[in-house]
Image (cartoon, rainbow, N blue to C red; front, side, top):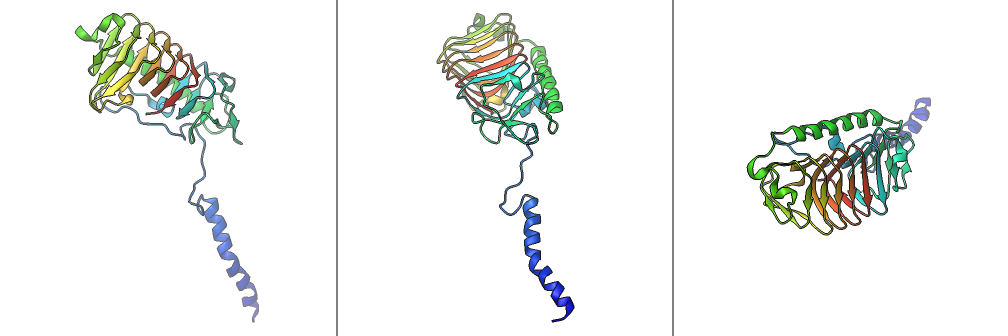
Length: 276
C-alpha cells in the first residue's frame, strides 16, 4: 500500500459520516426541518379575501391579539398564535409559559403546537417589531370596519339590538346601541359572503347560545366591530373575528371559531379558541 492509499482510505471511510452530519444540520436525515419560532410561525389560519372584507394585515398572524393582557383560567385550548403588545410577558397570565433559548416566544400546554405565545419584551428574532405592526394593523382593521357605509333599512338597528332568533343575510349591520344575543342567531350565506356588524356599545351573548353558520358561510368572513365590552356567557359559541375597542371576556366553557382582537385585554376561562 503506497502513501496515497494510506491517506485516502480513511478519508473515503469518513465521507458518509461527514455528509450525514451536514444533511442533519440542514434539517434533513429525519425529514424534519428545524423550527424558527418567530412571530407567526404557528398556525395563522385563513383570512377573508375579497372587496367586502376587512383586512387584518399582520394581525392575521394571531388568533388572540391584545394590548394590555391575555389571561386564562386553565385549562383553555387555543389553536393559533397569541400576541401581546405593548404589555410585556407579565400580562400573559395563567398559561404556565415555557421559554425557549432565544427568548423569541413561549409555548404552553394550553396552546396547540405549533402555536406560540409572543410578548413585547421577547428579545429574540423580530418579535417586538412584528407585534407592533400587528397591533397597528388590528387598530386599522377596527377603524376600517367602523368606517364602512352604515347599514340602512333592515340593516340598521335590527331587532332594536336584540338579534336572538334571527337569520341574518350578508351585509353591513349598524347599531347605535349595544347588541344582545339571548337565543341562537343564524348567519346564512355562501363561502364568499361577508358580514360586518358595527356595534356602538357592547356585545353580550347569553349562556349556552350559539351563532350558527348555514349555506357555506365562513367564520373568517364575519367581523364584529364592537366599541364596548364583549361578554360571552358560559358554554356560548361564537363565530367570526371580534374587533373590540375594549375588552373581550369569555365565560366558562365558551368557544369560538374565529379570532379575538382587543385593544385592551382578552380573558379566558376554560375556553376553546380555534383559528379559522
